[in-house]
Amino acid sequence: SAMMDADEMIGNIFKHLKENSLLENTNVVIYSDHQSFYHDLTNEIKSTVKSDYTSQESYVVPLMIYSESLSASTINSFCSPYDLYPTLCEMYGLPYNTINAQGKDMLSSEISETIYFSHLTGIYSPTCYSKNMQYIHKYKNTTDADVQNFKNRVCKFFEKQRMLNTIYNSHLSY
Image 1 (cartoon, rainbow, N blue to C red):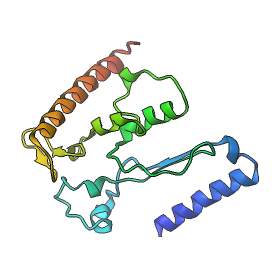
Image 2: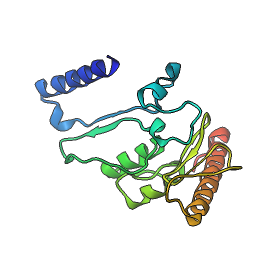
Image 3: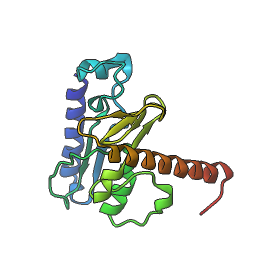
Image 4: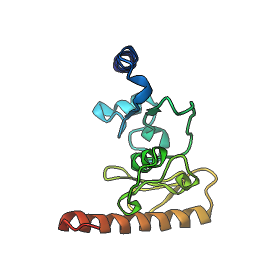
């Protein structure tokens, strides 16, 4: 029933925007930053096993971007919440400093290079998963080159995160 309530509320938002002639000049972004952790609902809803952190299905979350200027499309690429910021900046031509963005533009070819990191469950890419980089789980059709690419991207991710932490913790500007 929660999804039906959410659907109704989203409908009410769009109805209000339309009735008040605001829809043409409004963009709407709706997403969830994580799955249903509460009482292991994700495992029940998606028929996955709780201990199977390698299951990509467990981590699929909704994202909708609405704009009168956009045509309807579906992105089936592996993406993460980190990718939302650069995607929106690119979509609307907003300048942003790529130094402080961990993600990739979801509409670019760079999206194939994205990874997702969770403090709770590990590191994900379209080809691999690892809890702590001591063991790397390969998804179907993953090659040794894919594993090496995953390792390289994870190293770059954590190098960048360490730099960002230094900047934020020292209140430096860049």
